[in-house]
Amino acid sequence: MSKITIAVPEITIGIDLGNKKHDLCVLNSMGEVVEQIQIDNHIEALHEYFEQYKNRSSIRIALEVGACSMWVSSILKEMGFKVIVANARKLRMIWGDTNKCDEKDAEKIARVARMDPKLLHGIEHRSLSAQKMLSVIRVREHFIGARTRCINCVRGILKSFGVTDLPSCASNRFGERMLAHIPDDLISTLGELLEESKDLTNRIEGLDDRIYMLSEESCPEAIKLQELPGVGPVTALTYVLTIDDPKRFQKSRDIGAFLGLTPKRDQSGEIDKQLSITKQGDRYLRALLVGSAQFILSDRSPASDLKNYGRRIASSGGRIAKKKAVVAIARKLAILMHHLWVSGGDYIPLHKQALRKAS
Picture 1 (cartoon, rainbow, N blue to C red):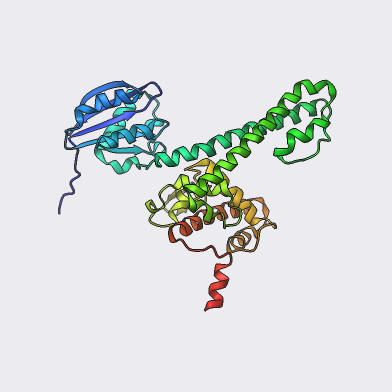
Picture 2: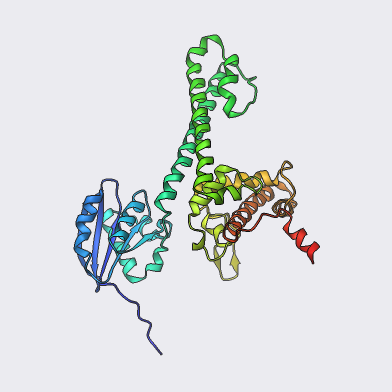
């Protein structure tokens, strides 16, 4: 019987990233701790420390995904090192430890990386250019949240004074329309919130223009994806920038798990529980896709295979069935977007019906 050998690197370095300092643990090929050290959280310190390892033939570096992991891993890769960015959700032995500290975390990351890198479930960061463009969408999301808080604050204060007959209106018109419904003695106070709401609306509309320009100039794929029902400029561009490289998925179906739209699994023996979706991956993109799915399932959307698919699931009745239908459509929509992006094909709303007619 042949033995299975696992290549052990000459040096394995685990890094626990911090806001001010990073903890490093260095292991040799025998798994012995050679060094444990802290370095400052800036580019110069990173270059200065890792310069000593540039001429080594077998170096493996592992670090947890986090706020600093993108630029740290990019610099280390530029220096020629093999870097693994570990999926923090998969390292329960670290975040679930009752005696947790940065020094021990760095050592655990190093030991797992030395033993079997696959256990780290390494992730790929998006490109720096995609991250920069995505920051426009993140800022827009922040402004929308701030405007919503302004609107809720105004409505809440007015309700406490008995003003409950406020008209409904779109968020971008709230600052203009509500002024006439505010009592004179509250205008000096609530007027500030209305002005803030109008200012935020102007900022959001300015970012909407930038998003459209980015789609036209840098991401033509996003323009094409807007052919799908319920997919607007923000959803399409967020999808393209979050995925970044569509070829890293062997199958379009893999995109559902990447975005946390597939069910969790807890199977043991004959027991296989029905659980909710994992909700892993990008939260904002998942929310956008769910919003698109809600539109597709509504009466306002045109007939399509996605709509028919969702209505079959929702036909069992009840709120739970409708929620399942929305999530299922969101997953199918994400898969379809990836397929159209990779294949370059045209969107056919009733593709199944067209195939039946052709046959």
